[in-house]
Amino acid sequence: MTPLIEAKGLEFGPKAAPVLRDVSLRVDPGEIVTLVGPNGSGKSTLLRLMIGALAPRRGTVRRARGLRIGYVPQSLVLDPSLPITVRRFLDLPHRVGDAEAEAALAQSGADGIAHKQMAALSGGQFQRVLLARAVLNQPQLLILDEPTQGLDQPGQAAFYRRIAALRREMGCAVLMVSHELHVVMSASDRVICLNGHVCCEGTPEVVSAAPAYRELFGTGTGGQLALYRHEHDHAHEGGGAAHHHHHHHHAEG
Amino acid sequence: MLDDFMIRAGLAALGTALAAGPLGCFVVWRRMAYFGDATSHAAILGVALALGQGLAVFPGVLGTALAMALAVHALSGRGLAHDTVLGVLSHGALAAGLVAVALTGGVRVDLELYLFGDVLTVTRGDLAWIWGGAALVVGVLVWRWRRLLTATLSPDLAHASGIAPRREALVLTLLLSAVVAVAIKVVGALLITALLVIPAAAARGAARTPETMALLALAAAAVSALGGVQVALWLDTPVGPSIVCVAVMLFAGSLPLRVLGAARG
Image (tube, rainbow over all chains, first blue to last red; front, side, top):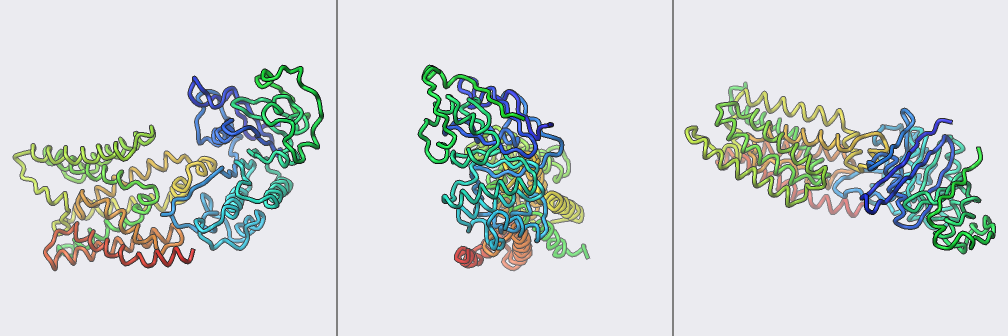
């Protein structure tokens, strides 16, 4: 299958202390790929490299020809000097019809606020509007950077259900960063554990059992992660050294 | 009809307002005020060089403004366009321009004309420059509106949509130098930034979308320009400062709207 987007050998940041090194990543049509990793592990940086907002010091990012990306950034601060309603925000950069805009807002759980100023939205509403904008114009790939921050627990669960529904309805692929490990593990086809480099990747089951993953998140991460816990004793991996191992557990298919 | 100096003055002021109002919104949204100062101050240097070489003033102004704008654009790409660097460039260009004008010696230059503008001396040739420049600025703004707006709103969202924010910033930079060339005879180099920023600021309170803000800014700039010319005639005051004073009054009048807008949410 031709990948929608493929990064090879990315290196970013000062040579002495790179933020990312030797990171390769591909997303195929229709799959949900999640990046997990501790704070400062370069997840957002990797997403910004993927959309072209940052240029890697080494390596390449290749997009499929004419790839349509819907992007939800980690944070977006709009300058208060720029007045803009939710409806007009959805028109950027491509004008959309009223029906289409309403549908996208409803799909994202943000109906009825089209006339509001972006600056007047609550954090959760703002996040939903960003998602509504991202799903307009038939994206082939959604890139979501911690899309559920500012949402409460039921809101988060609803958000991930919508992502899954969007994938079913539009067939788009999803590449996202998330901290909600229990949701990630149940909603992703493939998980990539990042800590400056790719520590391990594979299906949720494979990753949550991987020693490198447990090094980063511990075994007691709680939630539904426990469902996937295969209690291998990995003491034989040699403690701290396991962190530097590369575990390439690829998903089948 | 163009023989009447009042009509020419009015048309020149209107043409300037047409370009400065909408572009001024981007200056406000992107916090480019200092950038505008540097570019317009460089125009004085252009005046000196043009007169020294016996050339027409408009191309000289456009050339130096363009050179300054590109220099600042390049610096901003390296993260150097801080207040300090812009301050050095802006005032350095102004001082160098004033010195250069003095050095041109033989030619008696009425410097005040270019520092504060004198729309009453506008010729038919000047009018062609002003309206040509204004039409160019408005045309490019309309043509690239969504791209410029997306890049202004969020460079990252622009990237994801396949828009290069640096390119859009360059477009605005070039338009800014065009406005400087258009406006120098009307408001003068010292107050061009005021004509960009103040009408846009006055328009903010009543506007709910970027488009209405641009149109209101255009209207505010036009009222300021025509009103300022009138005031200058009545009170025998310099035209540029008079235009800016009217704009400031419009801004003050818009403040209650802004408070209402904030309450309405």
